[in-house]
Length: 119
Image (tube, rainbow, N blue to C red; front, side, top):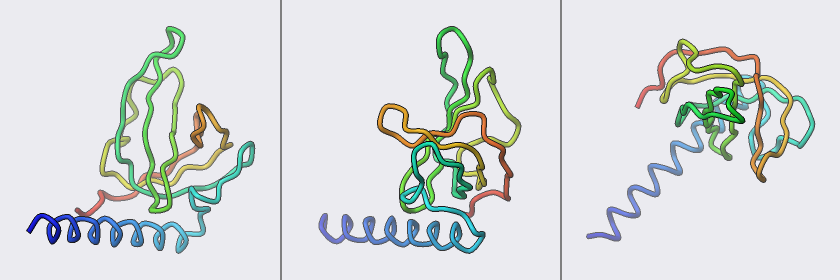
């Protein structure tokens, strides 16, 4: 029974990831898996988490954007909160990608918010 449940959960996660990949490509965005260090990119996906962190005594709002191929860390320096930036919200980010701690990261990107993520 556990294997059936684990398989169903994995299949659902794979399905959701493939849906995110299709949505990102359909709106003309680069996938997270294809972004390059020190290159501008436009990436679309769903915000999985939003956290307030302090970076060298400066507030920083940090989010994880998932597009089905991977996750992009997005950081707004000097911000404690941005209206609409919340988990489950679909968004499109545009900016310079850099590798920070081995993770693709965008600092202070331009962004567009879409309607709430269904499900």
